Image (cartoon, rainbow, N blue to C red):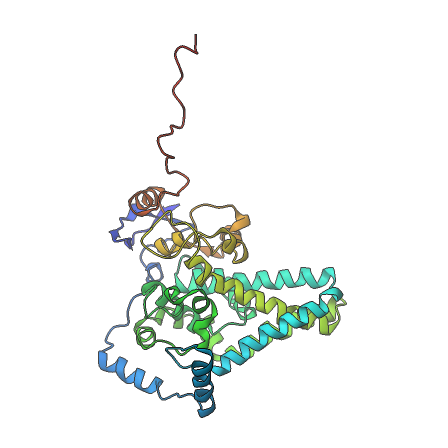
Length: 393
């Protein structure tokens, strides 16, 4: 193990080199561009006029007349008023996907086989790893480095999740960390659970979010040839890995009926993957304790961590976003992503895995935590009670 030479700011404290450890460090790990593990620097040379011009062009999109009329009808007759235009196309797609899935699940769940469930769990795990280990910990936070074979695998796995392009995902998540719980945050949890969970995809973004998105430096992401390939063929890759491959393999090689394979993987598995990811933005920003920093909304949520493969230890993650584990403690059972990253590290495909020193974590939780950390003393209790001298005779 070697020590990184980069400094970083955590909770307002400037770190020394000894505060950051790197596993499987490369010889030049402490000096190259990718070791700047902040990953949220602003683009240089962007003026206010540039931002205003971009926002003006972005705002050229308008709702259709029918869309505006429907939104007004909802406001007049249902009393539900929104501060932004509703994206009816997204409402139809996401709402239709969920409704169809619920109906089909209760109709066809009785026909499912062991193959149905095992293959669905496998594909869901691959898709989850593409999001957690790829889009999140690798490309957004640069919490570790990955050799080309691993980057290709993670890109393909990410395509199985059926989400936006990697560029959009990374940009939105970097904005989320830099401007968390403000108008610039794409899924600001101050606007409620539903908005943070999925509502942010159904409404037009806040102008501050649009403008701040133009400030985020994405040059490191665009420099990766794997991302370049993904961007160029994004829609084809999404269709291939989200729908075709998961449906065809069980049918062609495992004897699964095609209709059942499609329903299980292109509906149920897809919907679960989306919602497990969204829970990190909603539930993990509202429910749980805050042992590392009580001043912020993100919280430690074990349930979310289980379904999101280790992403629910969110209070810790927002304090130390560059930790490749996205958590301080917890077995592999509640952080499956870390297990796989450690496996890839053993074969040399993942390296420069960054994590804070135990001393830094201890200083931070003692200064800012809510007192719920496992190491926090309970009241006046002592670890070893003093022995009564009268009873010892």
